[in-house]
Figure: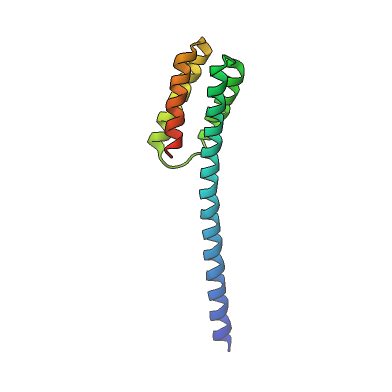
Length: 115
């Protein structure tokens, strides 16, 4: 009888551990998607503000986009290139160059959307 109890307990513990591991993996995948969506939203808003020549609001969105993009995992090469484009867009926005800033932000937006 003790063997049956121990076997049942071991099986139950194995199943619960497996379920919690699956839940953690699923939560991590949802987090990556939400981080990418947040980054895209901030870059889109920054692009709108740059096109309006409102560089102070654009600067805030670009800073938030860079912070959110740090949480994106996977696709390191694409994320790095997109971050470089965001930085270049930010530099151009600080100089007041609407055309170049908008171009760099559009490139970054296309890269983030490809994830």
